[in-house]
Length: 81
Image (cartoon, rainbow, N blue to C red; front, side, top):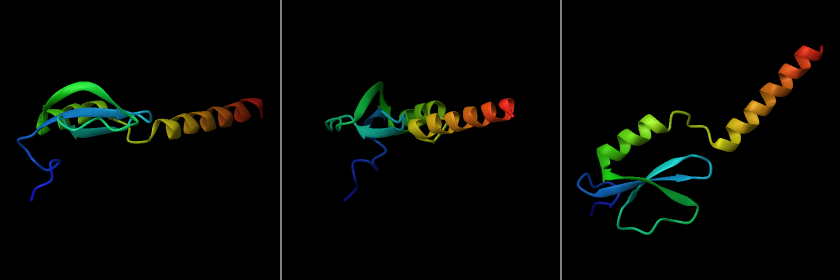
């Protein structure tokens, strides 16, 4: 039996979570808690194309913020030094 996620002929929607991570989800399934519909709906290749063009940084949002804060703190130390 084929998983609904593996079917090439199914209709999917693209979801995003609070960490700006993306997922394909079968359009007939309820959207799970913590995920938001991006409004993109289509076949698997269409949805994957959108995700590939949109999700260009695989790091979770919280990690990106933390890394930016670390870089700013290091720059301040260099400038103060």
